Image 1 (tube, rainbow, N blue to C red):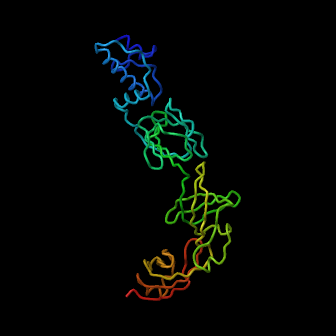
Image 2 (cartoon, helix red, strand yellow):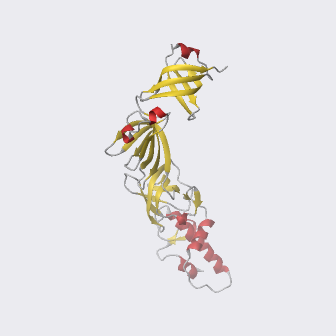
Image 3 (cartoon, rainbow, N blue to C red):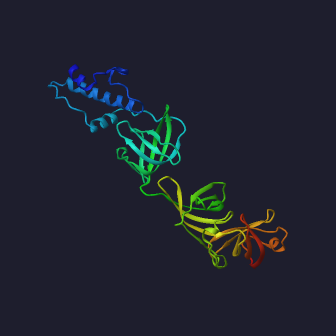
Length: 321
C-alpha cells in the first residue's frame, strides 16, 4: 500500500489535516478543490491495496476521474458578503488556474476566479462550466473571496443585447453624438450614442409630423422613444429615435378623462387613436375644469413646453352619465 500511495502523492507532498497526503498548496479557490481531489484519490488507492491482487501499473488520473472525486467530496460553501454585477467581455480563460479576465468598458481588465460552484448561463440556459468560452457580452455576478474576486454566476448573451427606452432629452452633443435622457416617471438617466446611421423621425399627429427636422429635433425637453443595440464595449448605439413632442409644439387630444386632480391642476386623458394616456396641466379655476368628471369625453388643445402638456382650450364632447 505504501508503494502505491507514493505513486499518487507528489514528492513534495506531506500530511495535511485528517492525515491525508497533499501536494504544495495552490492558491484559493483551487486549494480546497485540489485537496478534495487528492483526498478522494488516496481513499481509492487504499481500497485497492486491501484487495488480494497485484498492484496495477501506474496511471495518470484523467479529467473524468478528477471530476468524480470532486463530486464525492463536500464542495466548500460560497463566500459570504455583498455581490456586485459587472458587465463586459470575457477574455484569457485559464482552465488550469480557474480564472479569466473581464474587460469592463472604461476600466482596467479584472481577473476573476471561478470553480465548480460557479454557475454558467448562455441566453438564459444553464450549461456546463467547462463550456465557458470567450464572450463579447457577459454579465458576471461577483463577490470577494478573501482578497480575490470570485464569480458566483456568469450570464452570456450570444448576440448583441437590444432594448428600448422612452423619456425626455436632457442633453444632446452633436459632436460626440452622445444623447442623455431622463426616464419617464423616474429620475434615472440613460445615455446612448446617435450616429449618422441612426434614423430620427417624428411620429404622432399630422400637424406635428408634417415637418421632420432629423437630428435637429434632439433638443432639451423633447419627448422621444428609441431602440438601441449595445456594441462590444457595452456602449448603447441608437438604431432609431422616434420624436413624440418638441418644446413649443401644439397638439389636440380627444378621449376620455381617466384621472382628475383639480386641486393640483391636472387631469389625464386617454386618446383611443394612439392608445396613449397624457397628463395635461390645467387652470384649476377654469369653469370647464370644475365641471369635469372621470369618464367625461373631452377635446383638449395643449402646448408642450419641454416638461409637460399645458391646456390652452378644453371642450366637453360627452358626459360620463
